[in-house]
Image 1 (cartoon, rainbow, N blue to C red):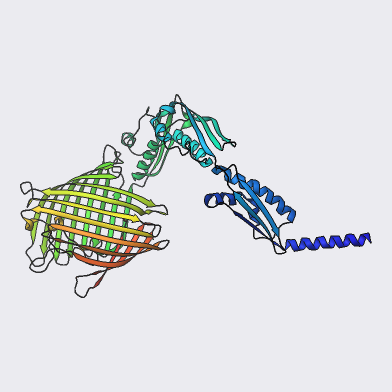
Image 2 (image 1 turned 90 degrees about the vertical axis):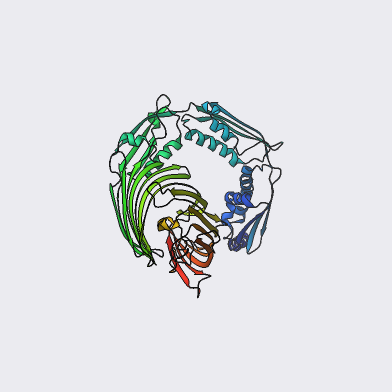
Length: 582
């Protein structure tokens, strides 16, 4: 009889266990949201079983109790040390439910932040600036992440500015539960700041004196990683080298000086390029190019190009001489020939230029002196020849934020530029003139899908003898980068035959909105307006259109169709362009 009763009890227990194993575990919580909820979910181990077959009830109870501790641990980094948790466990044949109700309680407030710097870093202006940006301040809620950020900021600053021996000798975050307050105590022994030692250059094929002009620091200067990074970027961007490695040799540092190693491998000396292309302004084209990346050990370079197209053929040779700071400054001597035959204009331009270009962070300044001769003919008018000695100055400024997903794409930014040029009929010129051109463009991202793009250009010329001004110096409108919907340089004053001869004034404006429809595709709506004329009272032509943009690895490829509002029959015109947004 006893054996029978034991068997019945065992059978009942097994059946109960089988029913329980068929039940699903459901875990829920309330009382927190946002980043608090995210941290709770990362700490709470019981969530791994949620919506799955429930373990034994004994195991559930054990995990539920441990979950209370885990939730409290998850909330402490946010300053919640007085959290109360009510746990309810309910069971049915189909489901076991564990529900946590979280009461955050009083939040811990920072009562003291004591950061003590021992060593030269204490008097470093960079540290004084950094201290003002410490994220943890007296009177604010305690966040463990801000405490860690302070330590990271100090370590980064020390590494960046050459405090190689720096270390924390005290790191304390003390929480007082009785009054919900916290004190931060840090002592950072920075030691002395290191200086640059010897610089060794390996495998250089150019003059050491020339390469030394890339260095913006000298032996004995205080160490700064930014100087090394700037050097690496400058050498890599010079096109002289295939690989560049710049590194401080900390293991060889002596007497607070760290030597620097620069290792480079030469690039291929000659570069050849050949390729077909197409542009709606130029038609089909063929490009042939040859560059000699260095002519001599002083870094002089030679660039040449021949581009043949249906509308305009161009050839030039450019001899480039690096300036005192080769990464920013250069001089160049250029000879070029441009032959254009389009609509009713035939023109051949011969030009020689000397140019001085300087870069100042986002600014660029260019001074140029060019002498040009242009043979030209409008329609059936007699051909003419003009000669000009043209000094010019151009200033431009570019500020942009790149798309993190594609470094060839602009997320937002703007560009402004101004160009002043002129000539005098008393100095090797057919006529006197002075001309000013102002232009700008902006890209603004509203959100991750929508962008607004706007551009404008205005120009004016003062001259007493416009008839002698060659076509290359006059102003025209129309084309891919001007007023879409009109052909290249189709807009401007005309002669008695109706041939566009260009004007003294120019005005162009454009507004565009585009939308990201797929990871690498945008669609756009736009309107352009503008014209060139002999007076500001010229009538402005307007167009509107739609476009598709392919966000290719080399930059945006744009295909637009635009309609000129004022044209008879309002024909649509196709425009294809490739290049950056700014």
